[in-house]
Image (cartoon, rainbow, N blue to C red):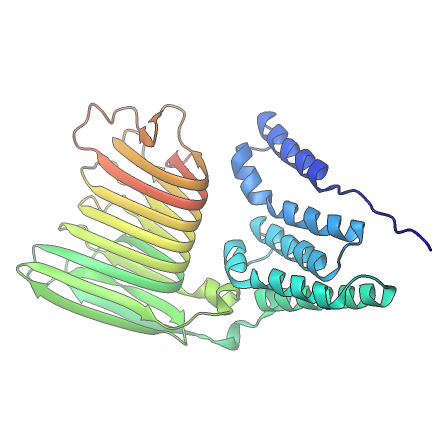
Length: 355
C-alpha cells in the first residue's frame, strides 16, 4: 500500500518572513509608512499564504482556494487597485469561509476526482464573490439626488443629527448667513430621506436620516457615488451628531469654531479637520476602519484615545502618557480642544494639516 506524503506547514516561516520584511522596509525608510500602517495595508497576504499553504499540503481544496482568492481581492482593495471597501468585504463575505469549510467536509480530499471537484467549487465561490464585490453593475439600484435645506429662523443655538446608511458624508461651513443647513444628497434609490425640524426655548433641532437596507451594493460603484454634501452655519453654537454605517465621513471643522461634534462610523473612515482655536468637545468613534485627524500647527488639543487592534501615530513633538496625548501647548492654553477618539480595529493617525 502506498504511503501518503505529509508535507510540513510553511505558514509560520512565511508569516515570519512577511512580518519581518514589512518592518524592515519601514525601518530602512524604503517605504514612507510606519511598519504598523504598512502591515495593516498588506495583512491580506497572510490570508493568501494560509490558503496556499493548505493547498501545498493537500489537506483540502475549497477552503484554501476561497481564502487565497478572498485575500487577493482584499489586498488589491487595500492597494486601491480595486474600487471596493476591503473592510466592507470582510463584513459581507466572511461567511463564505464557513461555507467553504463545510464543503470541504462533504467533498473530502481522498481522490483525484474529489480534489478536482474541490478546486472547481472553490474557484466558483471566489468567482461569485469577485462578481458581487467588483463587477456588479451600478445600475442595480441606481441613485437619486435631492436638495436639503433649513433656514436659521429665530434661534440662539442648534442641535443637528445626521444619519447615513451608506456613502460619503462631506460637511463644511456654509457661506449663507440665513441657513442653518443646506446642500444635496445623492442617495441609493432603495433609501428614503427623512427630515424633521423643531424649535424649543431658542434651540433649533434638525434631524436628517436615511432609511433603507444596503446589502451587496456597498461594494458597487453606486455605493461610491452615494454622497451627502452638506454645509452648516458657523454663526451660532452648534452640537452635531453624525452616524454612518458603511462609508466615509469627511468633516471639515476649520471654519466651524463654535461646534461640538460626536461622529460615529461602523465600517469605514473618519477624516476630520480641526479648527485652529478651541474650547470645544469632539468625540470620534470607529469600529472597523481608519480615523484620521488633521490638526493646524499651534492648536492646543488634548486627546483621549481608546484602541484595541489599532495602529496609532501622532506628531513627534506631542507627548503621550497612557491614553492621553497632548499637543506642545495644550497644558498652557485653557482654550483647548478636548478630543475623545475610540477606534476598535484599524488605524488611528493624528497629523499636522498639509503635512
